[in-house]
Amino acid sequence: MLKLEQIEQIDQETIWLEITDADLQTAEPSTQLYSNRTGLNHARSNQLCLHKFRAWLTGSGIDYIPSFSDLEMCPLWDVVNGCAIEIGKTRLILIPTDTLDRDEIRVPQEWVDLPNLHGDYYLAIQIDLDAKLMNIWGFTSHRTLKQRGKYTARDRTYSLPSELLVANLDILWMAQELNLNEIVATPELPDLSLERALELIQQLSTPSPYSPRTKLKFSQWGSILNNPNLRTQLYQTRLQQAVLARTLASSFSLSD
Image 1 (cartoon, helix red, strand yellow):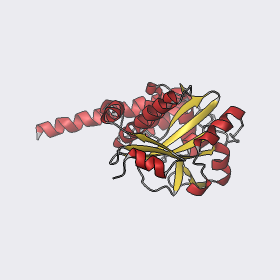
Image 2: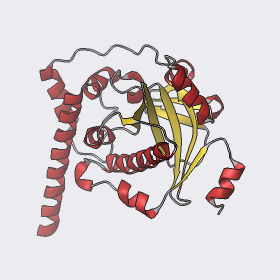
Image 3: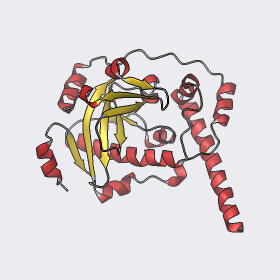
Image 4: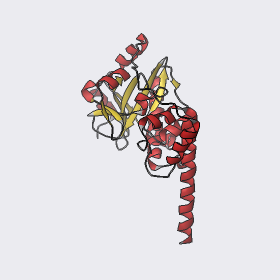
């Protein structure tokens, strides 16, 4: 297996970061904070991604602020992959994946079409736990993702092939300093009454190992997830139901 220094010599355009045992320990989430296995996996990879990216920014002398607090990220990671960080007035959306190929970046629709979540730029990040390496291998803008990306309704993602991504992050910093407007218009979301929103949240509260993000029309789902209060309500309701289900399962197991 190649060492980090050797990889950096071969690939001098993208950013390679070493993952230590301490990094893995820091990123390990509490199982009590997530309603499903998918959410737990989201939290693990995104906390690791954020931890390493923040450390790299600090080491590079780049100031940043979190777009969301760690507690605010829990309701998001419970249902969708991705995380956000802001540098000046620019929001970066980080999309970590453990897929080893670099054919494309796949961005969940929530990070593209929701006004309170979308960003200016999207970073493709590969996490290889076997090699203990994280690679920031390309980025694109919201404009490019919307205008040239392929939307897949089945999993509600926008994808962009690797040849349309920019590898050199120096170009991103230049664009950020120029304060370019790279966000384009997104579809309007319907106004849900609180009563209707709570009805939908109840429908989505049934415990499952997967995210419920495709169980509603995106306009309805998006209206819930775009609203911080409704997003928290969804998270708390699903978490309560998951805890209840685990408690009942444990009780039945003990009785056997």
